[in-house]
Image 1: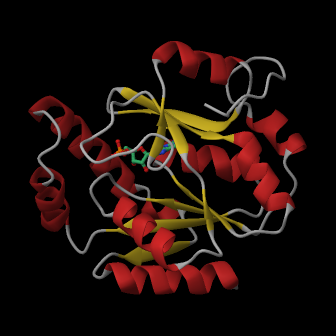
Image 2: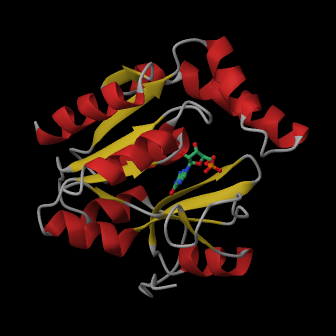
Length: 204
Ligand code: 5GP
């Protein structure tokens, strides 16, 4: 996997990241509860907006059917994730429903330095880290039309065990409660509308 940046260990440190990372209004973070449709929005943006660079995260989660290594995620084992954390190669990382997820720092910095609009699709804990680490980053919350609709989407996916589903629903409750921390909330009633609104924000 072409992600390495051996510059000395430690947990993601907001202080250090803030020094290493200049102010970037070109960086947008899309967050929101699992099942709200973030990955559908990302897939649509990938298809329709080549001008926006979308970060590919690393995860210790196993690929779902149809997911391709290097496209949806860089799928890594626990040891590799530990190495990435220890070498400070991740801008942020978080544990979510039993797996770890993180944003590779170097590819993102290269795109931002080139002036390209960048998008991260990450969970609430990750969004909070980015808010501290990258002054000027724009935080966008994707909300479901209703709680019932979110439960329907999450359970309808059918790719997770009952235990994982319970963890995701619990996380979703916490994430929804944090919507007020974000600058902008978009309600996912239509993927196309959300994409249009997101692109308009990112061009602003
Ligand atoms: P999933 O397993 O459904 O693909 O993702 C689970 C959660 O992890 C989602 O809320 C997704 O936004 C989040 N996630 C994906 N990539 C990252 C990342 O790089 N960092 C963090 N903190 N969360 C991520």
